Structures are given as structure tokens and as C-alpha cells.
Image 1 (cartoon, rainbow, N blue to C red):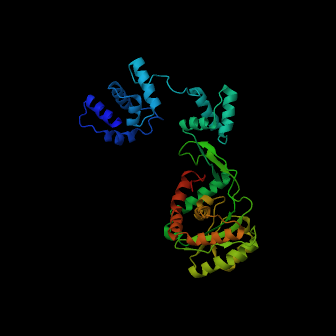
Image 2: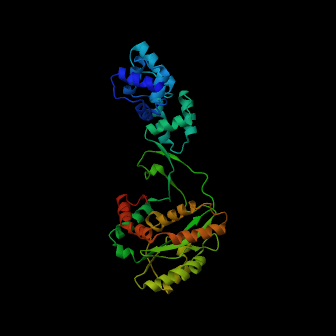
Image 3: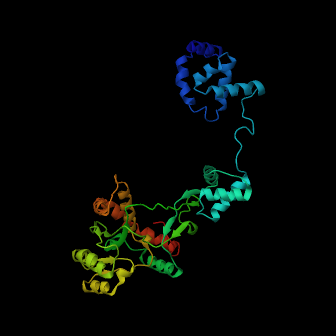
Length: 374
């Protein structure tokens, strides 16, 4: 019955070649029409069908639009002679333009404020009570999005100068020169992630602005401590420390003697050893061991993990562990997973992070020794 009426309607509208099956096929374009505003051309198409004698139900079925939408549109046309949406129709906006500006200003002044806190401040200042979702939408409209802050180590003015001078000295090193260096570092991995994640409100492209950085010590508490070293076209095995902390003696006995000494012997006199300025690394017995083994150490600026390419591999390794399902349940399982995932890191990834040192040095010089986005 509906098929016949649809074809009759098409003839009245001047579409002699119309087939009812076209209605079913074309109607898929309007599946979401009951939830969103209809295009004006679709509205007039509905009115045309109704004026030609098709019922509200038949029109709704043919165009796959809700019956309520068709009925409301027909009533509007009968009352106003128009299908254009009148100004002021629809749900009233909960916040005013000035309240939106107040929200954005408050979020920029306190970038760690949660949406709930911002809602409370808005209510206290203006009396308007807005949901967390509304707060998110208003701040998104102002270009502010909830993001995790970048965490960096603390840099004093002196440390920035040291970083600047070091990068100035090394920014013209070639990849061949960097290929002599074994980059090393320790890192800590835990069975559980950080459940107290902090988010800040920031604009796109401002991740490295000082106001969007949270500075902290490099290591938190708990977990497994590991050590590793990387070179262009090479790497050491990953070492898991026998204890949770590292002393100068442990560093010498578990790292320098079994790993670094052997790399120096295999590579030859051009070998350069890089480690940071952590207290165990600068112990007298460590210096004595390096001197006795003729291991040359490249000077390293203080608080500069963003210059050390192995830091990117710790992040790579952490993501690899996070993808394991089911996740490691105990420390032994975590150790096994770390050793295996370290071995599986492609050497091209290692080479690429070391090759980025030229760019790192250039960027650090450009910002006068401040944090760089690595």
C-alpha cells in the first residue's frame, strides 16, 4: 500500500521515473535526522510530500525520519508558512558569554583545577550551576583541553647555563662522532601505574610552556630498578639490580665491570661512556675504576634526561609492558617481561633516537638551556 502511494505521490510531484525502492535506498541518508537539525532542502521535501497527500506516518517511513519530527515540521509550516528555524528555538544555553570567559580565565589561572572545582567556582561567582560535561564543552570552545602535564626535572638558572654551554659545544657533532658513545641510564618500573594522574587545562601546541610543566624528582617509590646502555648499531643487555637502590659499589660491580668494561674492550680507544650526574655515578671508587680500565667519560650537563636518547627507550619499554595481557602479576614476572621487551626493541628505533641528538642540541641552544620537548 505504502509503495503504491509513494509512486502516486512521485507522479504528482512530477517524478514519473520514481520507484518506491528509491525511497528505501535514499532514506538511509536521513537515519540520524530525528536527532539533529534537518537540512532545509529535506524540510521542503517533507512538506512537498505532505501537501501532495502523503500522510505523516508514510512520509516519516519513506524518509526514515521520526514521526514526531515530521509532525512538528508540518505544524510549523501550517502556522508560519515557513520551515526555517526561528531564532531562539531549541534548548537555552546554560552559561552566558561572560560566564564562559570567566571559566576560561579561571582555568588558565589554576591549570590543575578539576571540572568539578571550576563548576563550584562558577556557581559561587555567578550562581550558575553547570555540570562537568558543560564545563568541558565550554573550555573546549575556548581552546582549552584536559591533558596530562609534562613532567620535567627542576632546572635552576645555573643548570640552564650548563645545558646551554654543553649543547653549544656538541651541536655540530656528526653522527659518526655520536656513534662512539654508549648512552646509559637507570629507570624504575612498577607493577601498577600511577592512579593519581593530574590533568591541566592548556591550549593545543603549548605542551612545553613553563606554565604547563610539572617538575619533580626523576624516581618515585617502589618498583624494579633496571639499567641499560645503547649505541648506534648496538646495546647492552638490560640489567635488573639485585636491590631496590643503587650505591657506588653496586654500580661498579653490577654495571661497570660486567658491561661497560667489556664494551670498552670490544670497541677500542675511541669508546666514550655517558652516564648522568647521579651520586652513585660520581663516587670515588667509580672514578677509580673507570681510570684503571681507561674508560673515557663524556661530560654530561646536570638534570638533562631530555638530552639522553635512552630516556625515549624507557618510554617505549613502558608502553610495551603496558600492552601485555594479562599484565605481570608479581615482580619476577615483571622482570621477565622487561628483559624480553628490551631485547625486542628494533635497532632502528635505537639508532633513530641517537640520531636525534643534533636536533636536541639545536633546540636546547634555541631556548637557552630550558626544557626541550624530548
